Structure formats: C-alpha cells, structure tokens
Length: 113
Image (tube, rainbow, N blue to C red; front, top):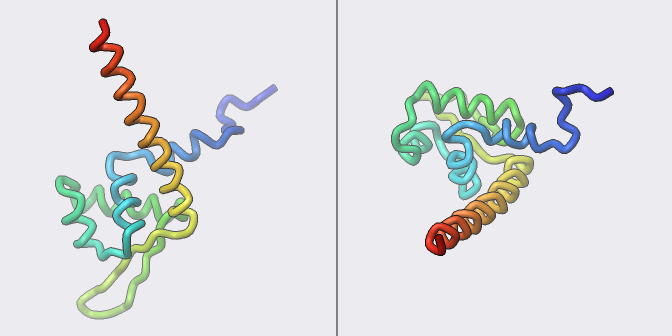
C-alpha cells in the first residue's frame, strides 16, 4: 500500500520549492549576484514588501538562498543563492526551454487548423 501524499519522484517537492509567482524570478536575480532586499523589490516590479518577505523566507527555509545580516545601523541584509538553489535554477532553465518549445508547437498546431 502506498501513501497518497508520498512524492517518490520528487517532482512535487521541486514544484513546491519554486511555487509562487515570484520565486523563479528571485532565484534568477540571485543567480546573477547577491542582492539586498530593496534591490530585489525594485527588480520585481509589482511585488509587495509582505509577499517579497514571505517568498524570501520560504526560499531560505528550503535552502535555496542564504540571508546574511551584517548587524549594522542602518540595517544591511544580503541574499545569496546557495549551491542547492543553483542546481534548481538549472532545472528551471530546462523547464523554461520545454515551455517555449511547447508554446511554439501549440502555435503551429493552431495555425494549421
């Protein structure tokens, strides 16, 4: 008998790690270099401070990013992608490539109809 909630293939865990509107774009921004909170907010136009905080905390809890508080006044905190986050970025890039191919296939199919 198998547990209905088991994720033997790991795909559900991966989707949960990148789930949310902003996580993939935040992961990509941090893949390029470390950023401070305000920089990430400027890069992610339309995100609220509350949602950005939630997404960053979830990503940190999942081990995708690390948070470094310099303990200075005014506060200075930087976020950096971890090696685990880099490996997920590789997977997301592959999914993006597939998505583009799929969209092109759908467009060709619609055009032929």
